[in-house]
Image 1 (cartoon, rainbow, N blue to C red):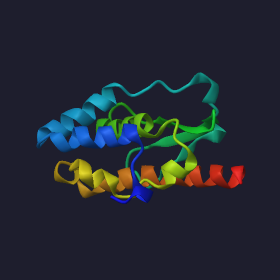
Image 2 (image 1 turned 90 degrees about the horizontal axis):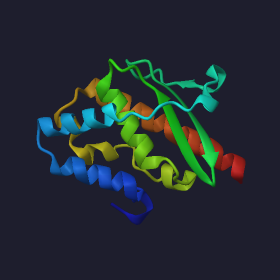
Image 3 (image 1 turned 60 degrees about the horizontal axis):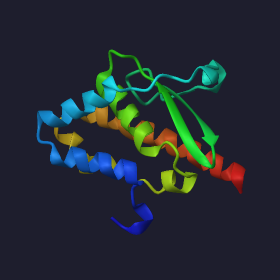
Image 4 (image 1 turned 180 degrees about the vertical axis):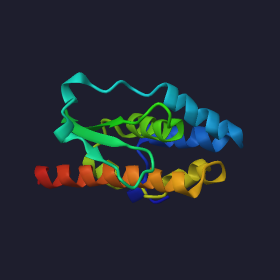
Length: 147
């Protein structure tokens, strides 16, 4: 991976954890992330600020905010969708606090290094790609506001 597409440290650690897992262990790790899904901050509960991720079969909504120069992403994902919830959780843990430039440098298919294509359907992977695309769109919009 080139330096330009280097993953932020926390996301790189997550990818490395998934790389060490085999088969069903990958699903178990993803479900651990789902179980540790962060609560949605009360100060952001404004429906008009939520963005739907329509490419996901699961109803996913997201929003973001800037704190101390870093972006913070928040999702609403139903509990009955644990794989998508787990992916959103790991994205928050891996990218929250990163600069827009760091977020935009994340390769669109970085999750393939995690081996998730071996344990999840193509439809689920499309949803994950859509979540990352929405995160990047928010980062690009924030970068445009900064410059």
